[in-house]
Amino acid sequence: MLADRKPSPFSRFSGGWVAVRRTLLMTASLGFLGLFVGLPLVFIFAKAFSAGLQAYLEAIHNPLALSAIGLTLLAAGIAVPLNLVFGVCAAWAIAKFDFFGKGVLTTLIDLPFSVSPVIAGMVYVLVLGMRSPIGGWMDAHGVKVIFAAPGIVLATLFVTAPFVARELIPLMQEQGEEEEEAAILLGAGAWDTLRRVTLPNVRWGILYGCILSLARAVGEFGAVSVVSGHIRGRTNTLTLHVENLYNEYQFGAAFAVASLLTLLAVLTLAVKSYVEWRSEAAP
Amino acid sequence: MSIEAREISKTFGAFRALRGVSVKVASGELVALLGPSGCGKTTLLRIISGLETPDPGSGPIRFQEEDVAHKSARERRVGFVFQHYALFRHMTVFENIAFGLRVRPHSSRPSEDGLRRRVMELLHLIQMEAMGSRYPSQLSGGQRQRVALARALAVEPKVLLLDEPFGALDAKVRQELRRWLRRLHDEIGLTSLFVTHDQEEALEVADRVVILNAGQVEQTGTPDEVFHHPATEFVMRFLGHVNLFHGRREGEGIVLGKPEDAGARIFVRPHELEVSSLETPEARLKATVRRLWSAGGQVKAELIGGGGDVFYVEMSHERFSELCLTEGQEVFVYPRKYRIFPPTAGQGD
Image 1: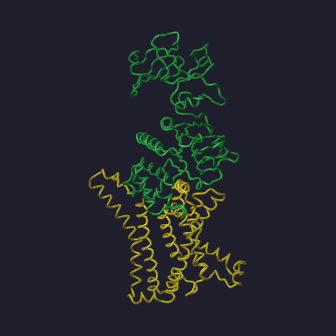
Image 2 (image 1 turned 90 degrees about the vertical axis):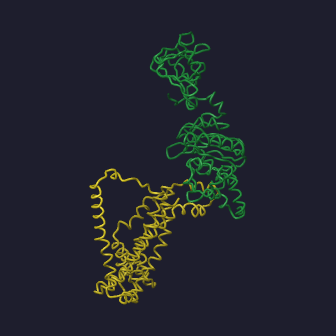
């Protein structure tokens, strides 16, 4: 689908005044963005490299930093695929079937968007912490969730849960069921119908949802901060590591690690734009 | 292979979409299910295909001798064509047509060569050989519908069901495509049932017409039978324009009168209404010509009777010049042919 390039309704007013107004508008919006988004971005990299490339590499090669990177990748690596599976199942159920409790499910999917991540983290601590019956029982059997990696994965799962499903539900609803019905009448089973018809039709939506949930998983701070316990080298993610360094006045190192997160964000944004562009061009 | 559905009922919540409908399509026949929107015709088609289940207590659905009521849509092997085509939008025309062959179980799946041959045959049949690599979004409505038909035929279905196959097309393409469909049916002889709300389409294409209204069959018959011998008031009104007169029987004939006369409701088609400029023993109902217009091969007139009722008359150009009609002129009308239906319960004006 190519975007119609309609002439702007203002373009019929010719003359200098329109040009001036256009310039003003563009300057204002670009200036705002530059000041509040562009400039900080530049600052992050400037500060990260302020002590030289050597110090930058050292800050990243630091074992604590490496362990934080590892944990962040682990959490994202588990959360994103699980969300993919959950999101596709939930969207499929909600968009294509009628069942009791559908409204509740739809609301529940949105819950992580409306609840503050800090509260989500605290609920996990309350339910799975050592003082709770469940947490106590698990601790007695040698399973640590809170103040350990599993808790961080759980918190990440919680905050990223809606992304894939939210992306797919409207898409699948809009597409209706006729293509699936056609597939079944042509002799396709449930698996063939899902694999050859339903999923290919929403493939760009799936990818887009995954990108969004990856960005959120890597950048999550609040929920993870509560369940992590800040045990260095063990339960620190990248965002928490940045906070630690910053609180210890190691600004150079803090910004060096922060620049990694920034790079990832910029990269995600680029992939996201590409996917958006592709999905619009797709037949 | 014949299709028979007996005593099919379907209820959606409080809405009774079908009330014990029976339909029979003989082997090789092309039958139209005709009715206004909401009459249950699409529901009946979907029940025959297996996409909907009928209410418990409904009769059997038979393909030839076999009762398929308990088989799933997947197992019934019907070819189904949707009103809005339902083509797989992410697949090329070729892949759309090949789909039914690709999802077959290993044992009956054709080789890649065999599949290619079959799809090319079908592309030839729908006169789209050169368009196999296009996507549905790159086709016109008529082309999409032909692809949908080829896709349905690819799996060699036992019967073909079409849901408003031409409903989404513009008038000219509709007409071309329905003539093409009729020729195609004569060529391949597949037992077919198609749903339409367009009486002209049904009468032109079908061998037999089943007219549905409010979830019940009103009449079944050849296009000639239903048009010339409508069984009910509904069929009479649905199959073309009709004038309603009130009057009474008198011996062999009728006398047209005013609504107050009550008595019989007399239906007359516009081309069966005769106009005379002089009062005769037959033509005693007075009317005024309000509007005259020429619609192609015929002249149509809008008349207004003494009671304010409006009638429509159709006549040949020759008859029109004989009569020398002008707008505002006073004339007398009488029916050459008319129908009176026995009053049925619940059928209002």
